[in-house]
Every structure is written in structure tokens, then in C-alpha cells.
Length: 125
Image (cartoon, rainbow, N blue to C red; front, top):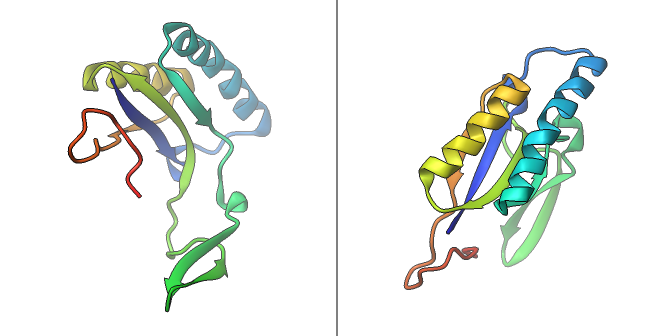
């Protein structure tokens, strides 16, 4: 099993009214419930936008340096994501497709790398 990140940039989402966004949220809930029932769901959140950026942090001389807002000047930023643990790329693509159809906006799929020397997917830090 491997973990995959299914994500979208906020800029990929068409301009919707608040009511339309609520409807989209409702339309994706059955897919999330199906992912949970299948045992592949790890975590998701679709409420990210420019207003949710807290800070950026870099290292300078071994100390953290915090600045307000995003690190780079960019119009694109993460809008939402889901993490799934599935057998292969095809399964990750399947769930990303289900989410894309439910929300009617594009998704990207990223496979978390496997740690060197193991067969398990671990966080590389």
C-alpha cells in the first residue's frame, strides 16, 4: 500500500456563490464516505484558500525565521486535498476521478515517496 495526495489549487475552482460551494461540499461527501468504507481514506480538507495562510518559515543560521503569508509570490495555492492509502496508481486515479466528477473541478495526484531502504511509505524529514 502507498499513500497518495489528491489535491487541487484554489485557482482551478470556478467562481461559485457560497450556496454553490456548499452544494459541491455536499456532493463530495458520499465519495468520502465510500473511501472510508473501502478503508482507503486517511484525511482530507477542502477549506483552504488565501485567507488561511498563517505564515512561512525559513531557517537562517540555525534559527527559524517567520514571515506573514505565503513564502512565494504566486496566484496559485492549495485549495483542498485528500490523502488516501491504496494499492497502486490506478486506485489513486480512480478516487481522484471520483472527487473530480463530484466537485466538477480538476484534481492532481501525487504519490508520497517510499523511504530509502524500506518497503513502507514513511515521511521523509
